[in-house]
Image (cartoon, rainbow, N blue to C red; front, top):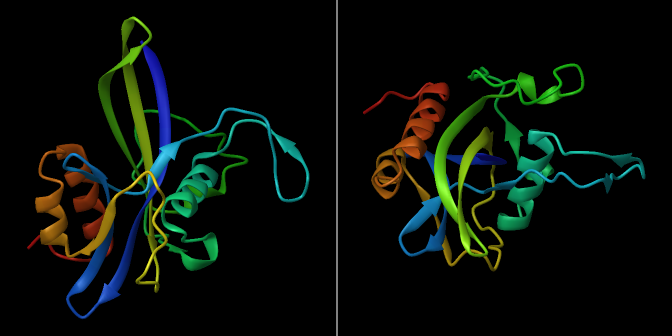
Length: 179
């Protein structure tokens, strides 16, 4: 079985109705948080230093920028707690992301590759960050987005129990009740 690792950000903004969460619409009834695959290629960073595989935090920031236009400077990451899993995906000595709220979503799906269908074990690492921005610059891989209260977001994510669970953990981390 192949393994695929993605990273993203649960983006929220504070409103008089409580936190509103950014959820992107991919089409065909599929809504989710900004996220994407962690790059394995050798890349050059801002300082011109070549580096290997991205860390989950770097990938989450990059993917969120690509999909929403929200940059690292537009986001304030929550340092409330780190909800870890059984997997050690990062080198803790080099990865500063351990100080931020982080949750994992794990599932299996099947992907067609040529003439065969492969079983993929997917792990999604999601961080929690606040923004003051209301308008986003949507990428062409999405056909819509919305800012939703917790109750609205839970309904929209009703087909995706893991995403609902992650949203619930984020909501509770913000000190909100389950109502």
